Every structure is written in structure tokens, then in C-alpha cells.
Image (cartoon, rainbow, N blue to C red; front, side):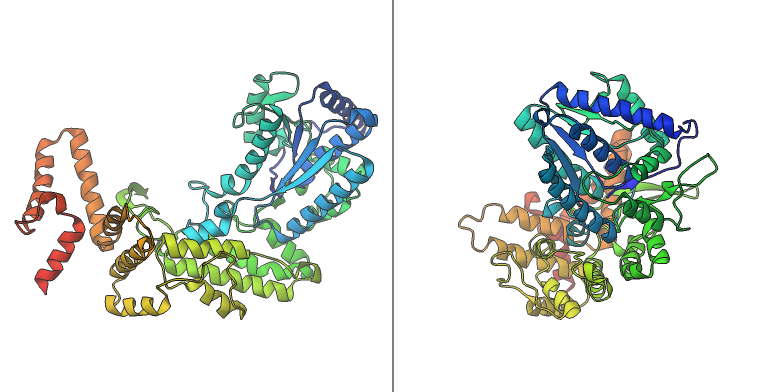
Length: 539
């Protein structure tokens, strides 16, 4: 469930109950007319928060009032499970979907519910623990498209391919925020027909927002006064919102001075795009039965630190140093952009997550004892990334899993447990490298690259791959950052036409090449060969 409520638009006028009733009746007719107008299927996106629940209930009631012979067009109800949703809300969502599915079948409604999930490669923990992506920030909001947008868009594209076009029904409202109101107003200008706006991101799909002018007050009055047609209790939803506010109150708004549930925000429990997870904090504070979620909140807060540079690699995820100009308190400096979490911290987050999962399964209420914070399939993919992409052949995931859970890790991936290299070889390599982290990384990459190419009938590309290992791992952090600064300065000198500086800097490269044996051609010279040549001379 992902609903982000903001203080209401103060310009918006509060409607009386009588006016709301008239509006609902007019909206009921509008929905029926749009539904019967053509054969274009509807896709109704719900998060099971108050807004999307309101729209679903409005659409259900309007279609249910039609004669059975007119209920011919399917309404696909889609919900995206990011797999890191607030557990209480996630349980509510699954219960709601099940109730909806059963009621639709019993009442002969053309409602087809679907629970969507991101592909394994896009899940939160595969990216954060597997690849080392840092906790999301507004400057690097990598989670939203992977966890939410892509699964929904993929489903909508499939409907479009099968039917030519679709109408997407959403519960967005102008009162949610000034930014949302401006966006909706902009789309109104481009409407191709009454109440339907074009979808900027998906061709051949139109957007219908039936409650776009409703207030929070309108929504809560409707949910509390109109019975839920698929058997769900709207009072439970109201109680859940109330429990997610610090003062444990969620009154109906009667005037501008009355607070509402507008500050409640349900979403991913790992979300670091907000300063605090106020909803989870309030749930734990207001209900002793929800104190079992404290380990989750602790992990979220540990992820959300202002400066995590000491936890991350000095290179970007592709292995190169990338610099940026930083202005801190008026002091300008050129520094490397921190990359993914280091091996230590990726293993740390896995251990913390498994500890939280193990603890919550013991302390949670009976109906939540089967909670899964990270799935077996996710851990299998994380293990594959560590072994194959990062060449960490010590294979630490099964060991960490057994240490925390006391159980043996059963990898569902065929052949995952077979490897020529393992922890014993890694320990020997650590002893040989004597604490030199970059030397250890380089040796591990070279050995594992050879292993990966070992069974191939044609070893095309092995030399390029080995050369990439040298390019990304043969320098110390200090040397790599220094080299990146030199490249940056040279690039700036070239762009500015500073011939003297270009000559000065390139002469340094020529001097370095001269240090190599005269019999070695320029084409053979690499930073790796220069490094090892220097080490041999010192010996």
C-alpha cells in the first residue's frame, strides 16, 4: 500500500453531506456511462488505502447497478506488492484481495483482481544486499521504478497489446499535494474526451480520476457511511489509519481547524525517502501487539543515515572512479562519488535482516508468524551476484544464513552448490595478500574469471575480461582517485584549449611508458603491467 497524504489544499471548500450525496449520484451515472460507452477494458490501480478503496467501491457500486447483460467489460484490479510493505498493511491487502475475488465471483461482477510483484532481479534486497545499491535517496531513487512502476506498466502493456488500448482508473486527488494538483491540472488541458486524460508514460492508455476533486473529509464520510460491497470492513481501514497517527486519533474533518488522518503514510517499511516512518512508529507506540515490528524499524533507521560514505566503495558500481564537485559550507572540493556498499556492509545487512526475520517469527502474533522479510529466491539471486558478478567465491551467504537461523540454506538454483573455489581458497588468498584489500580483490577476480571461462568451448573475451579486472582493481584507492583527478584536469585543459597544460600532463605519461622494458611495445603497456613491473624491481 503506498498512499502519501499531505495537508489539504486550503482553497478547497468543504462540502456538506447533502452536496456529497448529490456528487456521488452524479459520479455513479458518469461511471456507468463511461463503462458502457465502448469495449476498452479498465485497469483499476489500488493500494488499498482510503483513496483507491473509495474509487474501487464507487466503480463496483456503479457497475453492480447495471443489468447483468451490460456487465460485459472486464475491470482488472491491480495491486503491486513491493515485498517490503508494512507487514500489517500487507496482511490487510492480501485479505482485501481475497475478499474481492470471492465476492466478484459470487455476485457476477466483471472484476478480475491481480497481485503484481517485481521480478527477482528488481526486488529491494537483491539490489541493496546483492548489488550493493545504497539506501534510496531523492537524488538516487532507484526503488520506485523497480518495485512499483515496472510491474504495473508491464501488466498494462499486456492489456494494451491484447486489446489495442485501455483506461487506467486511479484514486489520485488534487488535495493530496500542491504538486499533484498542478500535474493533474496540466493533464486536464490535454484531455481527449470528458474526464479522460492521456497517459504520458504509456501509449494507448487513458487515465480516469473520478475523485480528483474530493477532500479527505469526503473520502472518510463515504467510506464510513456507504457499506463495502465485497464484505470488507471500512471501519478496519479507518482504525488502521488512526493507529498510524501519533495521537491515535483520526477524526472526520468538519472545519479547517480539525486535524485528520492526512499525515498517515503507509508504504515500504524500508523507505529512506522520508525523514521518519511515522506510521510504523505510531503503530508500535499505540498498540502493544505491534511491538514485534520494532526490529524492522531499527533496520530502517540504521539504513537512513545522513553520510554513509564509510560503508561504500570509492568506485561506482561498474568499477571506475567518478568525481563530482562538492560545495560544502562554501568550500568547493572535487571528490569521488561513493559507489555500492562494500562486501562487509552487504553481509551486515543480510545478517541484520535474517536476525529481524527470525525474531519476528517468534514474537509476532499467530497470524503473522509466517512473515517473510527476504525470500529464498531473493537470497539465491543475491548469492549468484556475489559469486558470479562480484567474484566473492568465499560464498558467505549460506554460512551467514546457517549462523543466524540455525538451518542449512537450500538454494533452489540448480548447480548452485558446485564450485571449484570456496572459503578455504579465500582464506589462503587473504593470508597471501596480507591485508591488502585491493590485491585480494584483484586476485579473486582473476582466479574466478579463469574459473568461469574454464568450461567454455571457446574462450572468446577472456583477455578483455582479465584486462577489465586490472583496470578496476589493480590500483590502491589513493592511486585510483589520483588518476581520476588527472584525467579530469586533462579533460578540462583540453576543453579550455590550454596547450601548455596538456603537454605538461601528457609528458608524464610518456615518462611512465619509458620505465617499461624497451622490448615491450606501447600496445602492451597497461596500468597493471606497470604496477607489477614496479613491484618486481623493488624485490
